[in-house]
Image 1 (cartoon, one colour):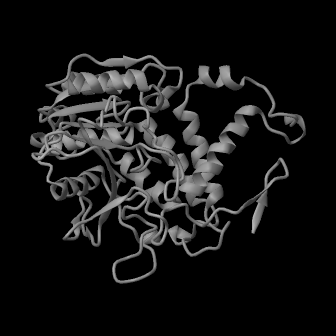
Image 2 (cartoon, helix red, strand yellow; image 1 turned 60 degrees about the horizontal axis):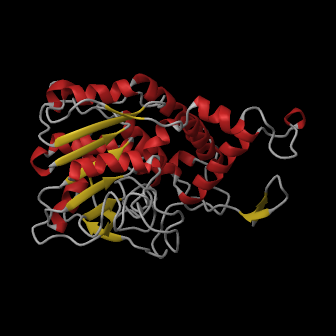
Image 3 (cartoon, one colour; image 1 turned 90 degrees about the vertical axis):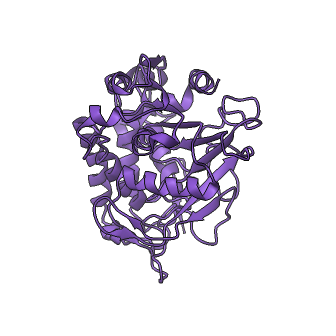
Length: 385
């Protein structure tokens, strides 16, 4: 089966889910299975949890050179290295991890897990339920960022890492990084928070709710139980629309104007059903995501982000952030309209070990934390000096 692009090219239909499945090439992944069901903050527990992760470099005998790298919403454990069997995309932070780079793997032992609830090897909606072959699907439980960090703490225990030299993350990864530093202050020596917040804001929840509605409104969503559908039978339209909405918030208006303006896409005529260049750009990113991601994971992770509040049950954000003992750098992107610098300023103001807010200059908006390797690398080197 195949679909036809506007160019007339035929491409295979995407599978119902872009999740990594048992039997797929493992790539560089390794796995950690929790010995016991994971207690969940919302109640109940999640059995059969395992986390996929990748490592670079060699761990010191005492684990003192370990660095934890935490990915954003549609990222995964493949933070560095080329695309290949088991890895549909090259490493999302390839410019920062490797010999001689900011995270110099000749010196540091770098660990990148796929988040709990994700779809690239860790337990999530596309994973089989314990004792059965059917995936969790719509029965997968609600997760919080704290649940995800608790699973990552189990991974650290299994690796023999008592204290991270550095925990670093941007966006959703930054949510987990700050939760790590508040939940386990004695286990985090250095902390780098990029384009993230202490709690999800009303506007962030609003943008996310549009994406959730897009997925759940797709007739192929089937209340999350679509994983047995044939190619082309998954909620691809909804997931693609969610990606388009999100991607607009990830970039800045000046960048979109400079790159695309009002230009049509090639010979297409927007007055006669054709697209503008910016529409083609969004279509491209939507088409890529539906082939490498799972709509159920998108929903689970987005809901976890919406529920993010480091101050919940801790006397509020300020009291929670006072628990952090790590040497901390907090950086925002000057053109970020999704996680504006005021949110990072709050983190910098109330974390005892933080100095002033660092502001990265970038035309790329929120995505700047993924693209400005030189500026981010300088912050990493400063913390690890």
